[in-house]
Length: 229
Image (cartoon, rainbow, N blue to C red; front, top):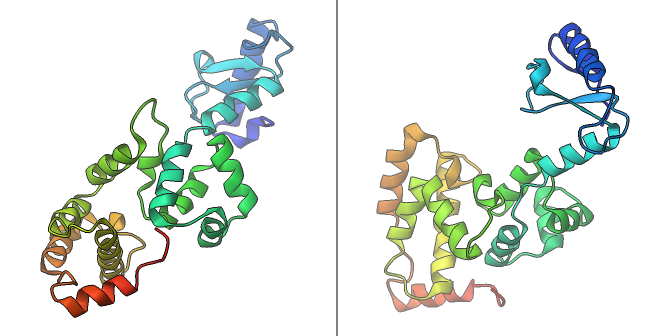
């Protein structure tokens, strides 16, 4: 990652303080002790050029710092979500417009840009927040708990489907109601329903009719279930 002073706001101050910090540290990399040629913004801000915020580093260590900062996604939670949705890497690649190799690399390293992870989260129908790397948790339970905290609409959907005892049918009905919400509110996911329309969305969920109230409805719903879940 090459650092160019003109990439930053107030590039004159950036250039001046960069040289000041490098000279003050005898051009020594704070990570490996090698020759420092660039500086790293400790707080990640491109506008904070205070010398205390600039860390002298070599190019190789600078690359490692940014790579470590990007590796922040919980791979196990992504895989759990893929299992829940019943899709593999190839299908996820098609849904996101990414290559299968890209998906494989993300699942291997946990590293990718926020924008790319957002596409994956949308395809899996979860808010991106639930895929943030966590130190410990039972992954499936953690995923569901985080999702409920993020969306009050999700809480009402879960409450609506409490009476459905068959877990496979419950998952199918969840997909149906989610699709209905997306169409009604013109959003990619019910997590994207604007806050000012929460009351409307909650009322919609409460009035939504659960299929399977009769034998014929239940049989019809069962026929539409995938063979493998």
